[in-house]
Amino acid sequence: MTVRAITFDGLSDGREHLALSLGEPQAVPLVRLHSECLTGDVLGSLRCDCGPQLREALTRIHDRGGYLVYLRQEGRGIGLYNKLDAYRLQDEGQDTYTANLSIGRRADERDYTAAAEILRVLGAAEIDLLTNNPDKVRQLTALGIRIRHAVPTGAHVNPNNYRYLSAKVSETQHTIDIEGMAL
Ligand SMILES: Nc1nc2c(ncn2[C@@H]2O[C@H](COP(=O)(O)OP(=O)(O)OP(=O)(O)O)[C@@H](O)[C@H]2O)c(=O)[nH]1
Ligand SMILES: [Zn+2]
Image 1: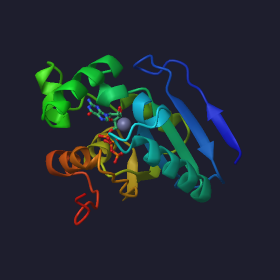
Image 2 (image 1 turned 30 degrees about the vertical axis):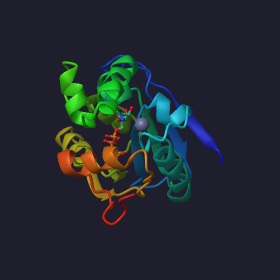
Image 3 (image 1 turned 180 degrees about the vertical axis):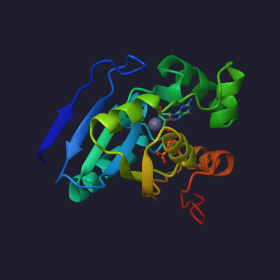
Image 4 (image 1 turned 90 degrees about the vertical axis):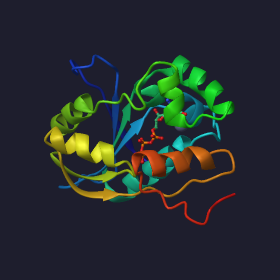
């Protein structure tokens, strides 16, 4: 797989987000905005679905042509240490969003302004977005990116992440097909 890595100067949040260009260039590219998850992406944690989603995205975007934008928004924007603190509360029974509130943070602190800046630099003003998250679609649209289709990812369900995925469906209306997959 040939991959072109693209770096950026002067993004409004000052972070080192990375874009990967995969496959053949397209008028309307397939794009994934992947939020950093050290535990899932790198360490293979089964508590979430981030690692399998990342690998699925790389393959699908390579086949279709487009960009994977790796956003440095660990823990839905609260950072790694806070996410690990929230995990402790989840082990005591709180759901993934309530645990954020319990440590004094918002349920989801992600902002996609830098992502929209990146897409504009890439010339990707209209995209197909690989996501189950309606908030990503809402925010990007408000930032001037046209979403032709929101393309759902696969459902990467396991016994350890079932509650986490259920909360995404019930609390933030993610389009994940976990019906009948209770483990
Ligand atoms: N605060 C917190 N963040 C988490 C937790 N589990 C995963 N994350 C972070 O959540 C982010 C991934 O977001 P998700 O809400 O799983 O999925 P999404 O990106 O909104 O939606 P998709 O585009 O459909 O994948 C990554 O930054 C992870 O580090 C958790 O229990 N608590
Ligand atoms: Zn994760």
